[in-house]
Every structure is written in C-alpha cells, then in structure tokens.
Amino acid sequence: MRPEDYQPPLTRWGHLWRLLLMLVISAVATAGRLEYQIEHARWWLAIDLLLGVVGLIAVWWRRAHPVVVCTFTALASAVSITVSGPAALALVSLSTRRRWREIVPQAVIGIGAGVLAERIVPGPTAPSPEPMFLIVVLTVAIVGALIAWGLYIGSRRELLASWQSRAMLAEQEQQAKISQARSVERARIAREMHDVLAHRISTVSMYAGALAFRDDLSSEEIAQTARTIEENSRLALTELREVLGVLREGPGDADPEVPQVRPADIDALIEENRDAGMRVGYTRSADLDAVSASTVRTLYRCVQEGLTNARKHAPASTVTVRIEPARASGIDLLVVNPLPIGDARTSLPPSGLGLIGLGERVALSGGRHSVTRTDDAMFILHVWLPAQD
Image 1 (tube, one colour):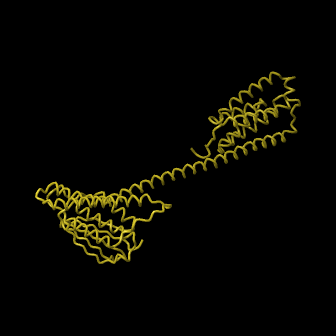
Image 2 (cartoon, helix red, strand yellow; image 1 turned 135 degrees about the vertical axis):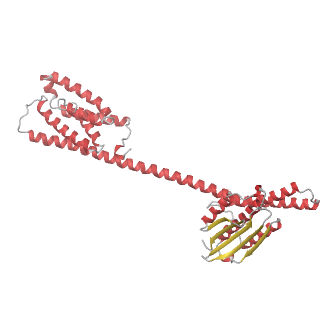
Image 3 (cartoon, helix red, strand yellow; image 1 turned 60 degrees about the horizontal axis):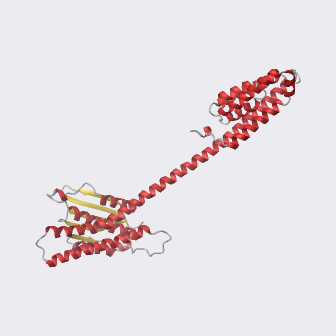
C-alpha cells in the first residue's frame, strides 16, 4: 500500500463528529429556503429531504468508492440543498487521496452543481443575472476550501503512514539484528566448546581405545592409562567451566577475568600431546611476547585444533608444528602431517567442524588460513595471524 492510500480506521467519535459536521453544513445551507419551501414547494422539500437522507447513507461508502459517491452527492446537490453536507464530506474525503485526475473533474462538477442549485432550487427571492459572478466566486471559494482541507488531511495521513512504515522497518531491522546476534553467539559458544572439548576428548578416546584393544598391558600400564584418562577428563571439565565463565560474563560482573593464554602455554600444549603418545616435531622462532594477547590465544587454539585433527585422522603419523615470523608483520603457523594409508576409517574427510570453527576464529582475528592436501600425501594447515589487533 502506498502512503497516499493510507486510511486510518474509523472510530466511534470519528463517526459522530463527521455526522454532526454534515448536519450543520446542510442546516446552514437550507436555512434560507426551508420556510419558503414549506409554504410554497412542499413537494420539492420532500425530494430535497429524500436526497439528503440518501446522501447521508451514501457517504458511508466514500472510502470504498470515492469517485462514485462524490459524483452522486455533487450532482444531487444541484437539486437538493440538504445533500450539501454529504457532498462536502465526500469531496474532502476524495481530496485526501491527493490524485489530481480525480480531484479536478470533481471540482468542476461541484462548482457547476453549486451554481445550478442557486438557479433552480426554489427560494424566497428569484435569482437575477447580476449576482451570478458573485455566486460563481463564492462557489469556487467553497469548493477550493474543501479541496485544500482534504489535501491537508491527506498530507498528514501520508506523513503518519511514512512514520509508521519507518517504525515498522526499524523494528524489523532490530529483530534481524537480535536474530543475527543470537546466531553469532551460538556460533561462538559452539566454537569455544569444540576448541575445549575436542582436544581432551580425542585424547581420552585414544587411551580408552587402547584399553579396549590391548590385552597385553600390565597392571601398571592399565593404571597409568586410567590416570591419564582421569586427568584429561578433569582438565576438560575445568576448561569447560572457564569457557562458560567467559561466555556468561557481562559488563557488570565483578568476577575476575579468566587468565589469558601465554606463549609458554603453547609449549606446554606440545609437551602434553607428546606425553599422551603423539609424535610431534616442534619449532618456534617467532617472538610471541611481542604480539597481542588475542593473537596468542587464537594461535593456541589453532595449534590445539591442528593436533586434535591429526590425532583423530592420522593417529600414527608424525606431526610437525612450526611457528615462524611472517613477512607481512604477522605470525605463520604450519601444522604438517602425512595422510593415513590403508584404513578408510581413518581417512581424512574434506572438511570438519573443527576446521570450519578454526577458519571463523582466524577470520575474526583478521588472519587467513588454508588447508592443503599435497600430491605426496601430506596434509598442511597454514595459518597467518597479524601480530597486533
């Protein structure tokens, strides 16, 4: 619906004041002729009143059929003074639509009907040619005033409709932003959960699988494996609580922040995976103390995901991790491991949720990443991160 087509709903008070206005206009127009018609032209008075009642009924459909109702009441006003009120309301209502192709013809009909009514409707004095110019001027002024009033009302309705449209659009945009924020927050929670749990649970799964398939382990080896499973489970719960604390933290919370990841934590992560039985080659030539804390945290999560991915899909392979300074004032991370051979159960899938989450995290940090499967059966994860935010 176009703004100029906007029509406010009619209320009980709106009906009342419009009815009173029509009656007042009809009464004022009829006052000069009523006594004369009662005494000399009662049959004309009956027709006049009948058309006035029909006009009052017709204006209730002025919004559904504005041109038809306005034309009928204007033509009826040529022979009926009492229909002047409905004719005025119909003309004002049609003018609120602000369509000149409708207003101009109705203005001509209204002026003609008004002038004709002065000539043929019985009155106390017979019309003479002398005041005809004044009659035309007065009729044009009345019709122009009614049209101007309708145009003013229509402009106000259009303004209100545009405000209402803007308010609805703003509300829709707000709802879209809320929905987008929820989706982003859900993705953030999922990414944090994966980063924390995937690494620990993959270690627990590897040791639990060893207990299930190795029947030649000694009691001491079984106890050591069980302790490793218990320790990784405890660490997973601890890290999960830390992540939930970060996600629940608001601007008004007084709890201290979770300790940030330090460069030494990356070295400890490598040693932890070596202790868990992985064969990891590790070199770090970049000075991580000079980079931002958020970059170190992202780098830690990338190393963690690279090792987790290698453990799940190539558990018997040697993994090489290199952290080097990049040319473009950043940090380069390379995680390289041979692809598994033979068993399809451990073959590398095209992409996993962990790598998708890693890509999102790297993009949020302003970095880039690539995953390559080379012709010599090597899997390479390359991540570049800016040194500063």
